[in-house]
Image (cartoon, rainbow, N blue to C red; front, side, top):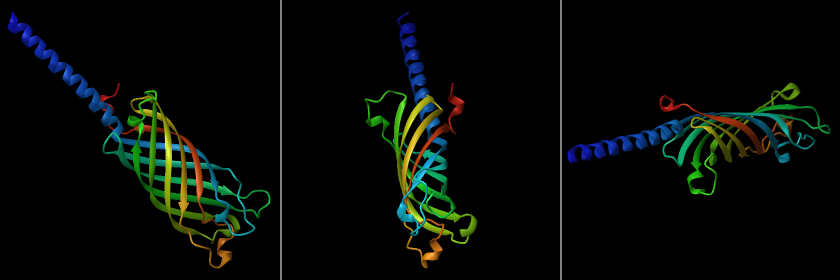
Length: 212
């Protein structure tokens, strides 16, 4: 009889270990690969335009698409693409610009350090280099521009489930564009910095065979 209870306790311990190990593995697997989609607004720096040209202080849309890979619960990397439309304000000559970028970024999840946060809330920082591609439309279509950038931002996540969260992202894109030469190359174009604010969803692309 004692042997039976000893074996019973042993099997319970094994089952308990497997339950918690599987639960933890499911959580980490679901967070390993994520896809992100966000939409919002942008605000370009006024110094990025040649004299006489000025954009609206707030422009729509900004669209971001990304794939994120976490190597540990706290850190990982992501590759993302952003599209921004910029247009003139009422006092400037008419122009519209397509500003697109691609960035490789380091990702740091600070949630585990901020123990006072509710369990549904997460805070993630990201930063990394990239390229910006400027394509003016209409009369200034020839004044295209390409330059390096460095991007940094912070995301505030609200978890809906193990595999889905909604988030607010605020990012600043610093452009390394040189002066326009000659200045007419800058008509209707842009070589400055960009602030973006977007709202999006982050969806798990891995581990869903463990999900409820």
